[in-house]
Image 1 (spheres, one colour):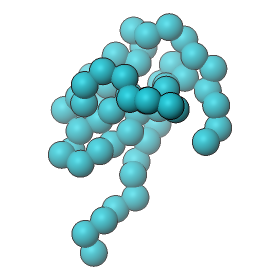
Image 2 (spheres, rainbow, N blue to C red; image 1 turned 45 degrees about the vertical axis):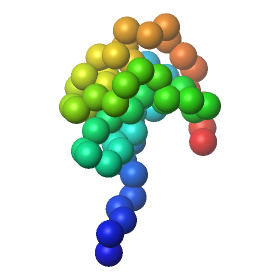
Image 3 (cartoon, rainbow, N blue to C red; image 1 turned 90 degrees about the vertical axis):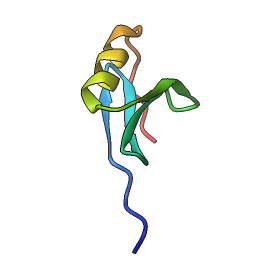
Image 4 (cartoon, rainbow, N blue to C red; image 1 turned 180 degrees about the vertical axis):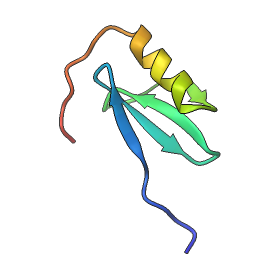
Length: 58
């Protein structure tokens, strides 16, 4: 099939989502922050540079 389950992890309270490309996007739950990153480590570093956020389920 042509689809796959999205992979994600939490860093500093922000969700790092693997999107098509592959690329990685930082999300605060309501919106995407910054541009897509080519590597998960870059997205994680960006998330760590943001103010700490409480992790919300969902």
